[in-house]
Image 1: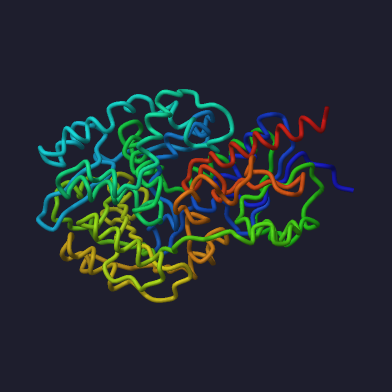
Image 2 (image 1 turned 120 degrees about the vertical axis):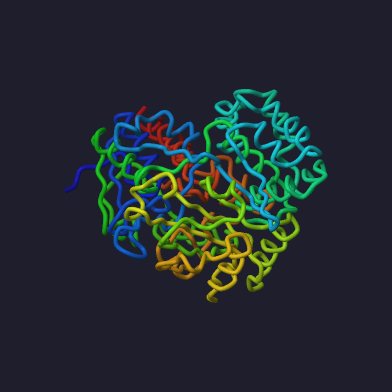
Length: 473
């Protein structure tokens, strides 16, 4: 008879691995089971196009990763994780060849907006600059579990964060600042007029000023590999090519921890319709490129930025998101693009480059947006198509096939519209617990939500530890 483990984790994404590490570091016996032949979930790296071109199929740039309280508490650099920082975290180019930038410096960011809005931006971020550590701990969590560490900053930020970004943007007089803030809010994959979109935009801006928007050397796989290395150092084990269809497929354990979608958890754990009201958000259409040269941006700032947002006005960005949410085909998409090979020469053969772009499309959309995506890029980087050596195209069906957590191509693993960023996957005092006392959820379908930061796994591990410690007593 197999020995009883303390915890079994289903899914080797960043949150599952984080939960496993934190439990193992507390002396618990932990094993991880992953259906795919490689670990990583949303933090993987593969040769998708041509030999020698290393692409991140999902996340590539990690502002919340480098600033994550969970990751900072782990010696991940001992296991190969090295953060690389571009000169500019993000650039937002405009048709006239200029750009707004999100720089490490508040001053450089503010001045890129123009004289009329520079002071407004400085005043907006001033109360929070230098307070990232406490803010990350206070906001990257379930908001009603425990008192904030810094209640004054928490209250000040909360008053701004709860606003729609469309309301926050009324403080600015010109389009450069408005477009940049709208682009930051669009990472939520939710309508810009929704509650809380200001909070997301501001957190991404503050992350740039505090720790940057870096990429891991070698690709996002380095994050997952470092977590797995740390887990093994504490006695844990990782099994790949192990699909779990029911709990009986797993060794006996005191806790079963799911880094999966809530619907997959309910199916495997036999919880029926426990998450029948789970709502998924828009999908994404993503293209990974092997490039002969870097993207030929008209705006010089974009040529030295790790991330480039493409959407010249806040109205155009809002319209693109609204189309995706309401089920309409993309026509002029808002694009989030990344160019990691500018600072990481391990991503491509010498002299060559990798590049990726994604836009928002309706959940489950089966069309081909390649042409509209590349027409949008060409508006700001004329001649881009001439430099493409190969492309790997993934719409919602392909994205969902790569990662079962991304239902319908929703890389946020659940709608973040309105209060759904806070109340996920459903209203519960402890969202990591389920109706089954031994079954827990640790994926980004739980607070604090999307991103490679491990904080959902961190908070789930705390809930599991409390439950198991209580039972041992």
